[in-house]
Length: 297
Image 1 (cartoon, rainbow, N blue to C red):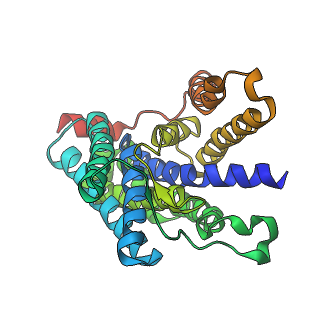
Image 2 (image 1 turned 120 degrees about the horizontal axis):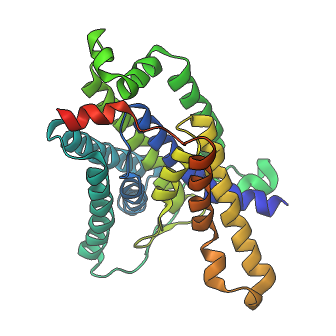
């Protein structure tokens, strides 16, 4: 049982961090389809940063800086250049995937897997079987709770919601929607950097091309499934992680009895199913009216 819980936490924690980034962006009126690109930038920067600086803190800082800069670029393209947010987000994803591949190719001369000498700090023997998990996993529940408080119980959260739902009204009472979007995307960049770092340096200690494997899009689906509520979206991300962990367990238990490709596809099938259920039962997260403002200006 402990093994299954550990597997769920390992696969779910990076997804939850990136999901929260999508939640805060959606609250600001932006569907952030750049989550995949930001996540892989965070993963690559963390591993390369550890190799260069021999410091987890410095590597994580580099990853956060790069992801925030990429988020600012996304904000500039959307808010200043008036580009379509969905197209801009997909462009950022392409930039992240292609840019990290180019960086590894330029530094090492090949697309081989890059291995770091160590990863994120672990919880340690004091936590028993769960001591193999990283500190990012332990911090995850507090980050989720903090995001809930920030978005649902603070003045900043109210202003952010107004920016996403009624930007013209928000501007009439002195709120700057452009600044709020910048802050939301920047916070999302930090979360994506941590998610990418946990993916590459949490239970693992390497970076491989395309290692995010669509997790950014799964996080985006969790935002829709959870109706852009931080707690509900977190449970949606955990649901996808549970399906993924069960798929891995099924591979070990059934071996050749079930097609390997089908078991690997289970998380993605669950993602599609979750979005479909959300659309049928609750309508998911409604398109923010702030998107209309972005198109019209």
